[in-house]
Length: 394
Image (cartoon, rainbow, N blue to C red; front, side, top):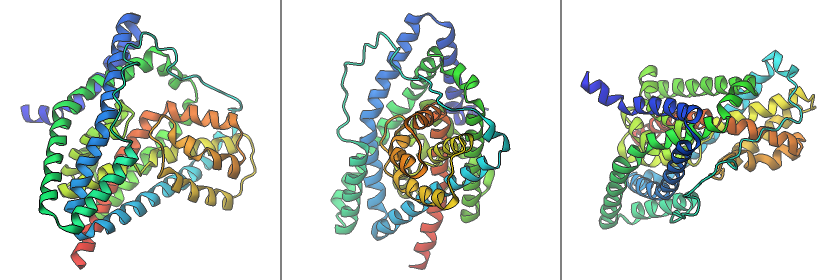
């Protein structure tokens, strides 16, 4: 019993944190709400500072441990991630087209203000805990160093990268993971106190419900493929990934979930050196949840506004759309802003339509992030299987 409680303690803490955050936001006085929001802001700044260090620590160690097959592993990961996002976008398009009542929704010129501008007494807004570099810079630097160590076969540098990885791992286990429940409390306090909980329930509920259902189906399909390719139990793979799913749901951040995602991936019998590479890499590359959110919203707008777009145009749009998602900036609604130009040029969307997509995307952000994270966990199993088969032929 004690062992089971310890095993699922993080999951329990996350559930309690979500409930507590909602209750604080709804029932507590403003001064208490502000305290938790400020704690959330401070922890968010700390997490942003830690993230490049985590990527450097895990990816350098992971890539350097892959040896001569590191280049192949990177290529396989990029291709599989791209195909996953393309599949997610096409699946969303066809799913929404066949939900017959969607075209009768009247969603023209609707805007929702879900910004954080109304949050007052932000005592930590002036504190600048700047990351040493951006996430993408950390990722590229990690690849260069990791592949370099692997190429020159330096035992000294390999030992150095391993020691740095151990330092980062200790930082993650002793600092980041214990802070996650407090960060989640602050996130849901902010959401519920600003009225977002009610808006999510009452506004665009049909669209958000469609997005979440499609995201769930897509992730289940990825896990089915993962179970077939790895010859693992489908339900065990999902069970092992649930903690990462709920952490992502609470934090609304894929990068903040990296430590938990790595632990979940290890339970799915992926080698430590490989998981240290593939999870951080997929976190900055694989956005199946965002692909589904944007494509579902876009298809709803096309149908409800009677926009004439043929399948050839949609196919070209999705192909380019998938490429652009691999370079998504790490900001709220970054995925929408990354593809906004082709939404205008390929589908003929106006600024109001893009504003609508941004609103829906932000309101489902927790579920989209959870889909990204769990989808990446499934991909890690698939890529590990492909990688293992390639190695067996060498």
